[in-house]
Image (cartoon, rainbow, N blue to C red):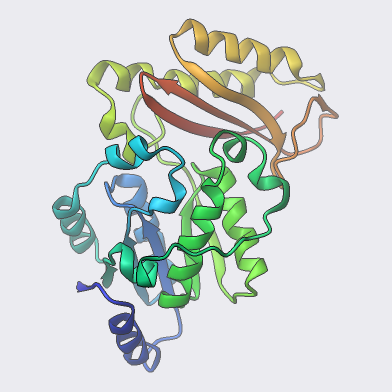
Length: 282
C-alpha cells in the first residue's frame, strides 16, 4: 500500500494508474476504522481495479467543537487494517491540504430540503461541511466509483445530490450497514461507548425492527410516538424517530401501503449521539 499526503502526489500517481487501468474505487473515511469500512474497501476491490481510501477528520462537518475533539483517532490500527485488506493507496492529508491557505471553503451547495430535515435540522451546517470535503476529495482522487455506507442514509442522498450538482461522472455505490452481533450499527463513535452502553445502544435497532414489523397502511403517527417513548424509557434522549419515503426522505404520516419507506433514528446514549435506519417492508 502506498501512503500519500499531498494532492500533487496523488495526481502524479493517478497519471501512472490511469495509463494502465480504467476503474478507480474510492472509499473516504474519517478513520477509527471498523468492519463496515473494510466492507466498503472489499466491495471496491470487487468492482474496481484500483482502490484508494482516505483518512481525514473533517472539521467543517462538526457543528459541535467538543464532538470534533472527542472523535476517536486510531491511525496506526487503521493503516494496518487497510494494508492487510488490500488497499492500494491511502490518502492521508492534513487540514491545509484539503483547505489550502488555512481557509475553509465558503462554497454553498444547493441541497434543498435535505439540509433542513432530520440530521440537517439537528446538525445545522453539517451537510455543507460534508459537501466541502467530499467535493475536494473527489477532485483530488477523480475516482470512477465512490463507495459509502447506508448507515448514514441522509448523507448518502446528500452525496448523490453533490455528484449531480458538480456534474461528475462517478458511480455511487451504497453498501449495506454492518452490525454488531447485538444489532448495533457499526460506527466509529461506538468506540466512545463503555461495555454497558454498547449493549444498551442495540435498543435503537430493536426499535426500528419493531416499527418494521408493526407498520401497516394508514396513520403512522402512533407508530413513531410509540417508538420515541420506548427509547426514552430505555434512557435514550432521542432527537428524532421518523418515517420517510426511501427515495427522497420526504416525511410520511399517512401510508398507502405501496410507497417504499425508511425508518430513521437519532438518539443520545450518555453524551454519544448515534444514528441508524432500516428499510421498511410490509
